[in-house]
Image (cartoon, rainbow, N blue to C red; front, top):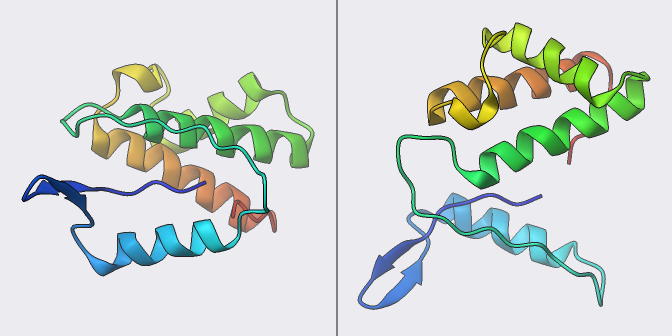
Amino acid sequence: MFTGKLVKKDGKLVYPNSKDKTLYEIFIKNLKEGEELDIFISISGVKASTAQISKVHTCIRVIAMDLGYTFEEMKLLVKEQAGLKDRSFADCNKDEITLAIEACNCIAEDNGINLG
C-alpha cells in the first residue's frame, strides 16, 4: 500500500518532498505487470482521510489473519492500544488515526508480521 501527499503547483500535482516521491517509485517498482490498483484521492484536512482509514483497515485484516483473530476483535485491540476505544475511525482526526496506524505497526512488529 502506498499513501503519500501531492501539492498543486503551477497547475501540476508535485511531491512536497523527496520522501513521498521515493516511496511512490518503490511502490511502482514492486508492482507486478498487469496488477490492478484502487486509488483514493481526497483533499487534506483535519479529519482522517479515506486513505488513512483504508490503511488502518488493511493492516487490521492482515494482523487478524496472521494471529487468528476476527477483523472486529483485532479492530477493538488496535483501538484500545491507540486510546480510541469508544471512537469510530471515521470520526478520528489525522493525529488520532495516526495513533491507530502506529498501534497496528507495533502489534505487527511484536508478532513478526510484515505489513509491507
